[in-house]
Length: 150
Image (cartoon, rainbow, N blue to C red; front, side, top):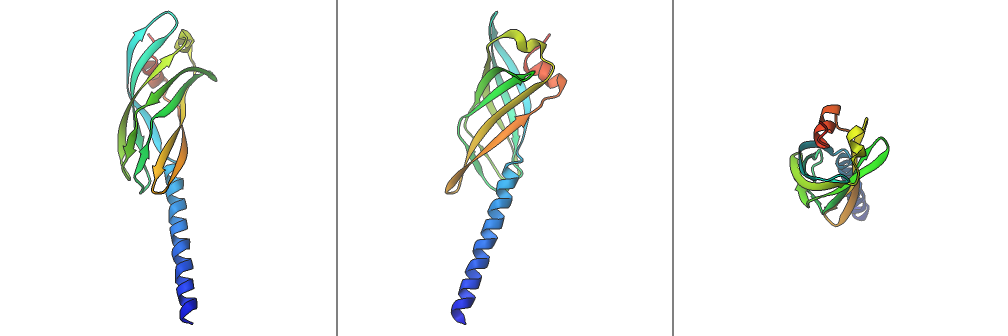
């Protein structure tokens, strides 16, 4: 009888940890991203370079450490630029500002009707890592500011 109680407690413990782990993974998958700053560094006939700052909001109870993150700027279903974000840490239930830069290869993005920023961030959590994709659709005003349209 004593052994079956220990096995039962162990199974309940593992089940509880699994449910908690899955719920935190699901929460981490819901990280929100928004543009807080975009600064044009230089502009040529064929390309532009920008410094940006994005805000990430962590809805989970986990501390998430992210390495350098590559992201893509897509306008009208066409990639018009790509960039990187610095390594960062997202504290539980908090927001973090992350600096980065991006480069556009053509000025076609200046006439964009729809803009989205997409990428995959790899977070190191305890003994594992998880890849969390993000897609951000800025408002029309944010898109104009982000790509510095006149």
